[in-house]
Image 1 (cartoon, rainbow, N blue to C red):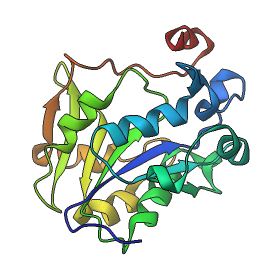
Image 2 (cartoon, rainbow, N blue to C red):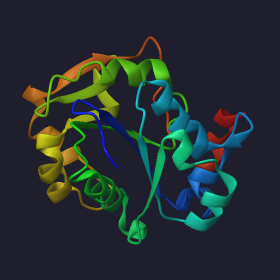
Image 3 (cartoon, rainbow, N blue to C red):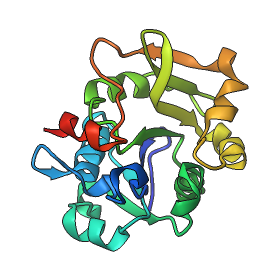
Length: 202
């Protein structure tokens, strides 16, 4: 698989088992008539990512069957066999899948934030300034998703990603280097974590 030299690849973390949702994988939740993972991958494509790597874990076979995540539509499915150990493993797995691809940056988003659409993702993507880029959406000044990691950061992010912390520690240690992109006017950064949150999908 080849990429243009300046391509920014979307990286969607969608492996969680929905523990607080009674074991319902978030990727399979229905949003606007289709699986949430399909919607989230579409957001990254609409933001300008011609290639999206989707990390699956819980019920991966069922997700593949239910969602249209096919190569012809720019999706590469990456399975994380260690998904039960937390989001950090999915981030590592996803970044590993980009190694050697020629991609210059990864725009990382989470499957359970349907209130963050293409407008916000495109803003963060536009902050790309080369392999050293670190940029993040911000909501009223508070850092959130999506996050743009230039390729120079991938190894460091992967090494620090543990449990459900993802890249939090890596980013906290580099606050001064992060370009914050305000998105509070175009997106709502809520998570779908509990049964009460499911109302947001209606």
